Image (cartoon, rainbow, N blue to C red; front, side, top):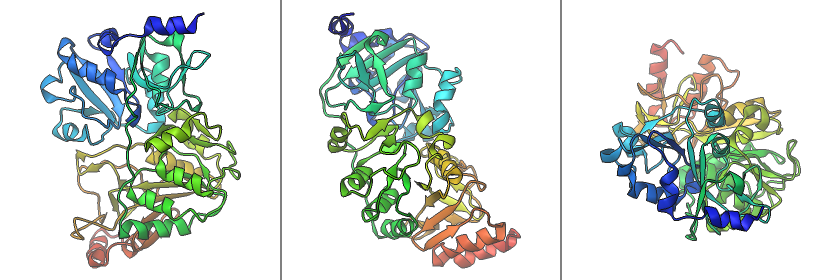
Length: 431
């Protein structure tokens, strides 16, 4: 097989590439920066030529033209997880969503419970053996690649060729386009005094030799900033970002003490700077794998001392976490939080942290509440929760009675709300 001839045969314009989409199709697009801008722009431009086409994706980062209530009968978005581009449509009801655990999305695709007719994805340049790397987001995309009728790649020299299980061969590709724009960069969140205080509490409970899963957000990154003096940390996570890169560069991450895949940092998608993407390129110390591998609680828990750090928006007095909605109004999604909380609970000497500022809106609203706001989507159950951390301290809940949980959570609530929470707990017969 002449690989270059085959490549040239399949190389088309974006407008021609989207011709493989049929009415009624579902197009699967990867997480975040794995989304292919040239293909999605072409689809947006031609959206009125289609009928009943769906784009399914976790965390859309750009608001393409097809994300439009006026043309949703032509092409519409279905979110596995809401981001800034899709949240307004989700809250207004014209962007739909599919509830899921991130680890189980590939299973939904494989079993036909979530359709995958076409894949649109960013890809690295082809190697000498005819393979492209979907290194920015292997996630559920690799499952969709196996299921889809048509795979369409946007090949970009700025996409790293990473190691792991994230490859597609040219023989499987229906069409490809080329682009050379820089991969979208996503900066670190803002970190303030509250985030720093929470980060210190968590960092103090992380031992040398631990393996880390770190979610996105100001508090998880505040934890990262305070871990650079630790030794022989490991990485087994869903997202690799600049915070983790800073830990690797500091020497705190060596992966030597990992009990599963020692010597390797493991992730399923990347979200960060151009520096991060260059670090990923042909780096033998990093592997990108599908999310059913990275996030499966049984697999991740093979790492002893697994540390899971994830943020929430509201915690009730029994420990239920609402991390993805404001009441009934959707905000994000379950993502990998529940996956890694369960993984850390299974891990030998593992610890699962849920981090949350004690208040919102300039100390006028307590985030620790008697009961979750009506309609709130429960992300992490009371049976799974372990450590809850605010700027006022740490509440360790796993194995504790309801009354013990209430006392612990009131103890880390903002002082202005503690009496109110105590009275509410008494009325609920929890104290």
